[in-house]
Image 1 (cartoon, rainbow, N blue to C red):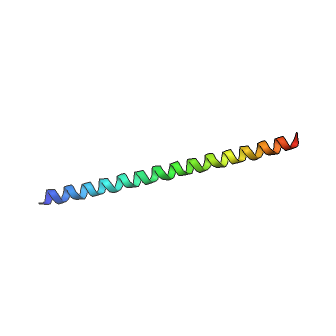
Image 2: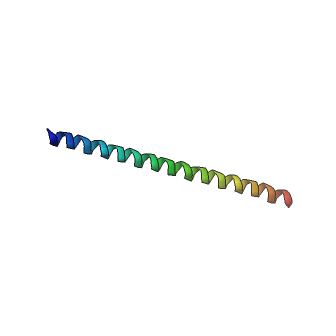
Image 3: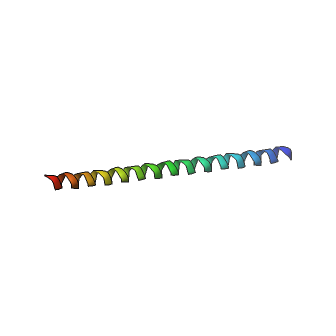
Length: 54
């Protein structure tokens, strides 16, 4: 009986850890996407400014 309870607890802990890792990966991906979008916007603004000057 104790072994079953232990196995269940270990499984729950493993599931929680996996969920946390997935959430962290998703957050990192979102941050990377936001950074890429910001860089693209900055490049577009720079191109507009440069083409406006010339």
